[in-house]
Length: 307
Image 1 (spheres, helix red, strand yellow):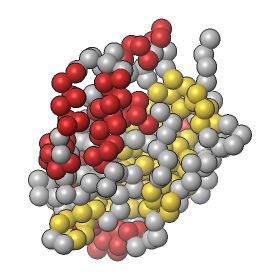
Image 2 (cartoon, helix red, strand yellow; image 1 turned 60 degrees about the vertical axis):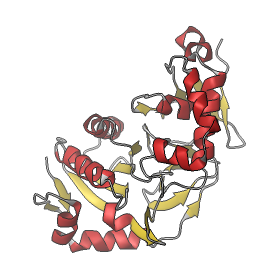
Image 3 (spheres, one colour; image 1 turned 180 degrees about the vertical axis):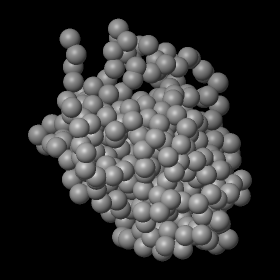
């Protein structure tokens, strides 16, 4: 089924520029979104979604009030919500397998909306910028094309992507919005940053760094974050990167070396150090069991000890 905007089917378009030219109200919506104040979200009641992860829940969830993700440069952040059930999913897409990732996002919301005959699917896209390699443009088009192939009517509410999420700072193109949150209770989507990116931040980063596919990290029925089991093989050669300059790491390990947030290099180094400390992933998952985390009364995520 095609995407809809303002209850009308979107016409065909071959570029994001053509999309925004045809639908100036999409431009206005994007400008309004990016002008909202950025919210620094506290860890309490937050479920943070890393790159190549997604999480879905409903307003009935007593453990999670905010879904959030950030550090997106060429990556795109996707929020799909059903207005009837209130079920919502946030995904952090990097272009690794876009069609499959969009299908997983749609399925997550659909499965939580079974039996709800009222309402519609609403889509919010944020991310990318006007990068030299046009990675953002390609990913924007691939995401939009994938949603146009879904069986349900999906209404595009926010489209703050590529050129509409671009600013030039001292001659360098960068995103305006790097992160977003979505209020699970109300459905409000807003620019956001997240000082706390746990639980298991390094383990989850290592999974992505070693090529892990898009994964669902949350069991909303039981209020549990699930990590792994992950799989990677020992690779001592990655220690090479720890002795390299920040500029070298940015050049070779980033899709957007001039637009990354300040903590990017340290995050990469910490992930590599984690992998060197745990060269065999099997040792982290005895019996092939995942790590499970539950919300404590204080609002933090705590790992469950499985017998």
